[in-house]
Image (cartoon, rainbow, N blue to C red; front, side, top):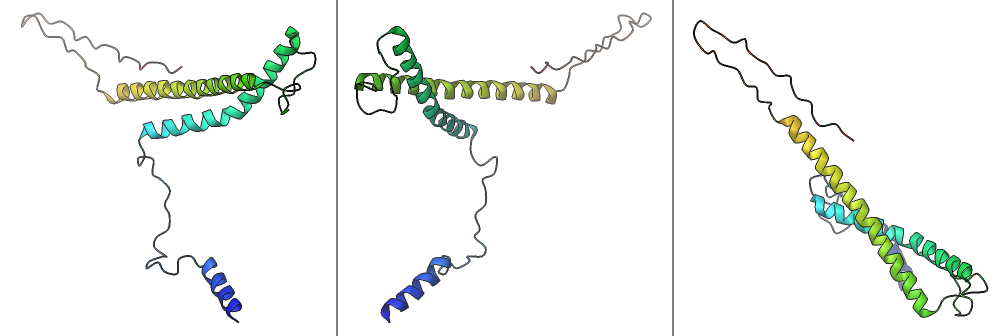
Length: 164
């Protein structure tokens, strides 16, 4: 009877996790606003995601590239299996470390390249928006004498920098 009682209590509380909350109905999660996190944190998170996401693919490409190099250069009679655990069919510990560090470096390079491109685009967009927001200065010519006037010169409005 005790087991049945605890089973019923467990089922009730497992489906209704807000039983003890005072205002459980009014405390729904809200997604982040665009202004809530600074751009540096967003950029770092994107760098992290791209770097870690590229790592497995880069590691496979690096190991296959190294296997091809070993086969073509004659250092190995058979095409080394990158997924083998034995040294005679796969890689030595030194080769595995070299492939791992190379893959890590390339992945970080991919992440940094994306970060730099993103920062340059943001800087260019900011510069164009600031240019559009500023007032253009017009110089109005003055008259030399009362009887001699120079017609006013109105310069053409300059164009904003072209987007590439």
